[in-house]
Image (cartoon, rainbow, N blue to C red; front, side):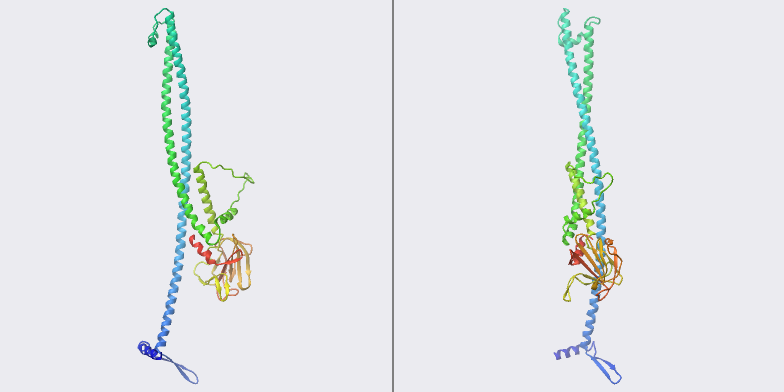
Length: 433
């Protein structure tokens, strides 16, 4: 061992020559000898410490820049998505209006066809009656011809008798036959005109049905895109609720109860929903509206759950949730400059604001779903007991009051009185914020 150390000292002596540090006292003088191996070990330790400091600073700076860029990108993506949803809603409303107009045109066309058909049937009845009258007049003409002693006139030659003997008894019958023939021609002309008009009405009805089919296909595409967008948007929200141990249904029910107020002089005090199902498109539209309502309620629920960090900007996590120094550390310690703003991580009501033993100056906030957050060791409290706060409101300043070794925030999350690791909620929000 000694031989190895001597060999290493001899090899390092060129780079690190042996040094002596003299210490002079009042009564005597001493010196400390530094061997090449000791100098090399010291320089190596200093280099490792400096390297570790540079690497840790770079990692912390990279995490800060990455998290900021990620939040900005998520905010931009959410704005683009909301604009897309608004455009889809506009297209849906326009398509529904076009469909209603086409349906009205089809109803008008069917009414017109029905009226034309009724008129056509009436003209057919008149034509048959006139034909019967014509046959009666022809029979009367033949009977008159036979009675006057003239030879019988065949039915095919009746027209030859029209106007043949003006002033005698046949003249009146010939005029009647001529009138009947003119009436029949008029009825035939009306029938042809009605047939043409009916054909045009049928073509208009076919065009209206074709337009309705196109609108239905367009509506189906819009509905499909809306349903897909709602499903994609709800998945990360459901994952957030599941990650923090909450049921999506219970969350929506709770938020819906808080945002269901209605009123006005014409609003009944109570009513039952008897809305009929209607056609499939109406049912599908109601389903999409219900999905959009659930999506809006889910976004409202996010600000009622403590998912964000209570400190913004530059900070350092100095102690995490779990065992520490033989005891259970029930929160998360975040260190930053003295007076750094402390923010509420969710909407709620302040239940305590003051001094509390080892916690020092502390603020307690009660949230929905049985959740509560603690903000301890504050330098200054900026809220009062009973005050309602919103997500992101400044409730105090970071300090070192109470049992504390330095400036930091002790942050706790409790569910029904039981301390929960705050990082569970903070990590769950990475899918949304």
